[in-house]
Image 1 (tube, one colour):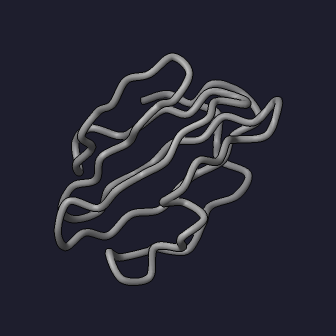
Image 2 (spheres, helix red, strand yellow):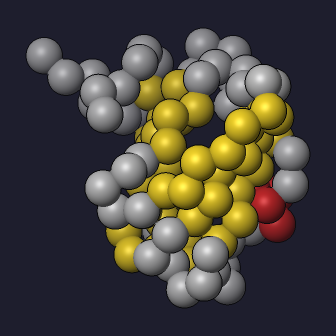
Length: 90
């Protein structure tokens, strides 16, 4: 049985993406996040350990509990973040 998200952000585009998500921040302890791209692409930068991945509609980005990260739009895009109490299925 798949774990369902308990909350989701609104859909953001490259203009409405909050500055807080473009700067270093992290998920809360005990909370997993999944960045879902609806259109376009987005760079997800993990800060500890340092790495990055380009997300698109077929490649979501997993956020572990307490993991510092930020995102950067790569042109026009639409995305949202889902939040889970356990590891989501990707």
